[in-house]
Amino acid sequence: MRLIAILALLLLGACSRVFPQKDDLGSAPTELTIYSTTDISVFRPVIDDFNRIHPNVRVHYVEMDAGPLYRRFLTETANGRPQADVLLSTAMDLQVKLVNDGLAAPHSSASTSALPNWARWRNEALGFTFEPVVMVFNSRLMATRDIPRSRSQLIAAMREDPKFWRGRIGTYDPSQSSVGYLLMTQDALQTSDFGTLMQAFGDSGLKLGNETATLLDRIESGDLVMGYNLLGSYATARVARGAPLVIVYPEDDTLAVTRTAVIPKNAPRPRAASTFVEYLLSLRGQQVLTDRSHLSAVRKEIEGPYSRMGISEATVGPLRPIGLGPGLLVYLDTQKHRRFIDGWRATVAPH
Image 1 (cartoon, helix red, strand yellow):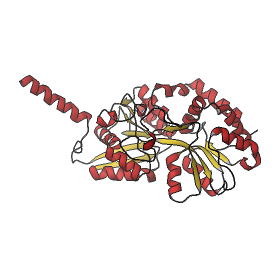
Image 2 (cartoon, helix red, strand yellow; image 1 turned 45 degrees about the horizontal axis):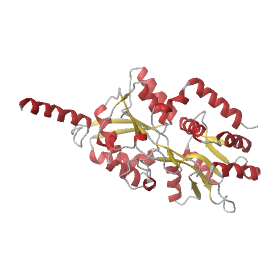
Image 3 (cartoon, rainbow, N blue to C red; image 1 turned 120 degrees about the horizontal axis):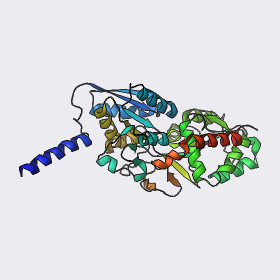
Image 4 (cartoon, helix red, strand yellow; image 1 turned 90 degrees about the horizontal axis):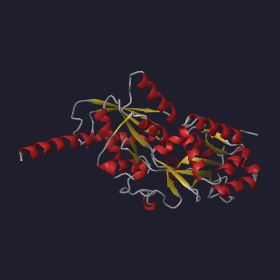
């Protein structure tokens, strides 16, 4: 009996480390540094609510694009001066590479087990939002026109009236944007019309950018008619504020990404990191993400704009979540990356 009691105590002790609780950090002041690709204006409600539970944690939120985030972390690691406790990025492939290279620490809990299978890999890359990738149109400029609902319809529209579309379509530059590269390579894998669409984009004088927000600014102002492969949550927030935008989920295939959390193995404050990630994945954190940050929760228990579509499934109608896993590493191969970008430039560059 005594041996059983000792084993039970040891098991409880292990669980307290794996499942961070409200008092896990104690009351002593501590810090938490987050590197993230999500705009602070969007993520502020999450940090504020986390601080309601853990007022002793001073959060340093460093916002940057996915590529610079990845490179900064690697540089700091190589120099033996790690700064980040948590990495949050929409570049799922780069997050998976960190895991594959042995640079991530696992986080296991009931909350991680509740994630859809496609939203977690080895409990080291953990998806915490569900982000459909959409086409966005300026509703005023399209008032007298049929709005394309699929890639094939968009191709047909560009061919029917090339003058209207010339220089008025925008998307990510995959040679500069890590998220843009992820989305374009997934498009190449999933979309039968990919080559034809890229050729049509090249003929139309495609405009390139590195951020959804900047491209949406140009669509909203009327500088662009539409944007391709943009993050749906940003567009949805603008529509809610009255922006003249129409969001289209392509009927042939709507890809969906998940913002992904990684705890570095060398995180200076691993307990604070684990506690924060557990909050992100908890029902409370997921509700805040949905209600206050206007992002879509990844957990199926939370009622959100896509919950009725069954986001826990691998493929739901037109929605096709990109799964976390080693398959995302294929296009990170140096030669494949170079060939893809060279082909992109040859097809889409002005001619």
